[in-house]
Length: 280
Image 1: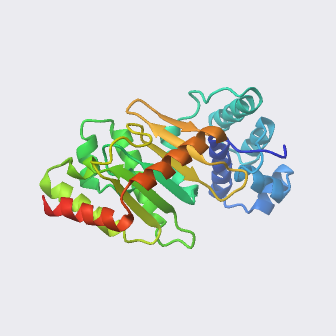
Image 2: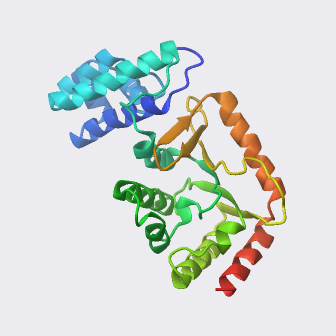
Image 3: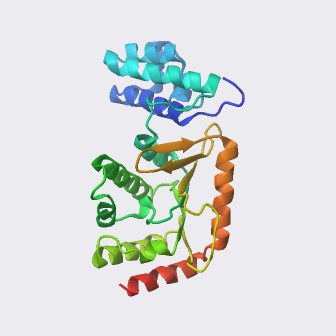
């Protein structure tokens, strides 16, 4: 394994698939390794994307686990493509959909820095609010956003909960979505979640003028493994996209730090949210 190995999101997705195959067959790492001729350490590193999964190794696991041929062949193709990405630095292709994979990264992340421009951050959206936003949109995307919200909620009481820092402009609080009742419930929920010690909510006031990343929402995810770099996630109604190049994710981190400086503090932001809720 290269000393400077950093797993791409595609390689992480492949690792999750391999772990899923083993879990479905209720095999321990040791048992599975013995069957395929790998050490349990190697298998663990493949599943956790701490080392690349070679296509031939994926093929061997598919054969040993008796995975249906079309299924293991699809994962082998992804492994081959991941190998090409690593050796040729090509962009992710149609074999991998970041929008579909995003919720998996939310489950794996230890930190989430979210900047939205016109909506409450997806992790904090109530179903009524989310449904109003997406009522004329793709139902698949609606379901994915619900899974993101549930992923955060499920981790609130974890021993290693997900830390969420959110920044958005004041206009998000004033834009009534789903009617007065739905919007008020959403703002009250935002106040409630902001009281969690792992959550920071800051609002950019409308008199702040221009600010970093204006009009360009993004989510920056951080992970516990040294081999997993920060990942920025960008999404439009057309598609989602991961940005993984360290220089670019560092730019996102700097923009986010700039936003936090311009935004109101958490206490003042909470007061502004309460004021907006009282006005409804």
